Length: 521
Image 1 (cartoon, rainbow, N blue to C red):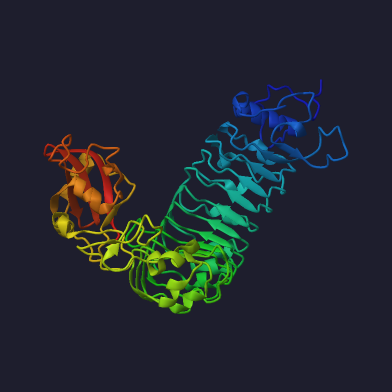
Image 2 (image 1 turned 30 degrees about the vertical axis):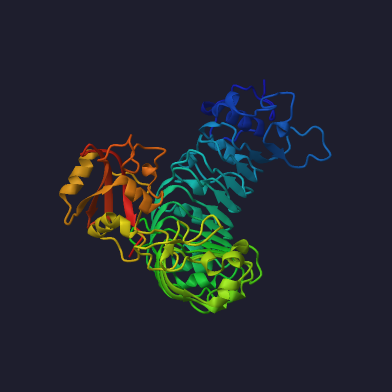
């Protein structure tokens, strides 16, 4: 008995099919249900109901159904099963639905896709949007076979994709949006990235381990509006070509300090960026002054304007020319800024009115003062006096005269002269054996013992394990606290890392270890 094209038993499984012999639409969707634990789905309304059109199954959309009540055979154009508890390796047959335009299976953490198992390019060339964010992907090998030439957006953020940049995605010449952020990719970005993907409007590469320089070919992607390559391990200088991307509204290259100082060199003026509203270059090693012509072409009345160059090595006076911005959030803390042009301190619309209320202090705390934000944000959080030293505007850390022992201790392990101390990274140290082996290779080491409670005060909650609500290591002198809880700090000159472990009763337990990395210079 021949099987009808739009009806098959619910027992179809992967062993009965292959991409070289495409199934009917109903067969393909039934295969998807059976392979991906359909009975456990959060919503499986109407699935496998022989008396219901496939176009009425949850998450399925079809075309040409406006004037037709019997649309079993109408083309499936969308499959949207976001956060629906799919648990499987996705059957490749799904990609061979000939009219499929959108496949959105994001937020299914137990879903993987084996692109490499596909026997060739997908049968249809109508696929435009492929979203597999927050799933269980570990590789994009073979992704060039997932869609035809018309793919416009690819979103695989927040997976566990490893390896180098997936150059196969550059075969999709019509891509407008590419999101590879929050994965485990590493190595340099392709030098021809912008040349191949010149139609991109959005490029998101944040939170990976990409290294080396930002490719100058990025200038070829002249339609870019959003570029986020933050939180990687990029180095070298900012390519001047970034300043030619006139359609950019958001550019963020923050926190490239996974290795060394990240992006270094001078801060150029980005004078051609007419549409920019969010610029974040914080947490790098940029040096020199802020140019008088900085963002000269940017919109001056945008209510969303935000500039963040905090945590660099900038010096000099913040230029008066920035006063042309009516509303602005300007983050400058943790630099070596010498002064602020007086005109900036009267900008009533900056920081949503905080500058009107607190003047220059709302931009940067004065010399000799500090708070954890490096500026006054409210009446409750003013800039506080720092008798022992806050040599720069916008200091976030104060080492007071009363804490001279800690001051000496930090000096002993090579603290910078900018008064900003150290902050922890999020990476755990190696195991005990590995830790001991590394100590044997230490070329120069200075070991100091610092009362944990005092260091907790100095670093202002920056070291989370020292939170007195979470650990027994709090300020000494409390009746219920041992008097000999110390922080053991060791500097390895080769790696510029500072290892610390907690010790109680003078025996180094080594139970809580993290890295400390200098924010100084």
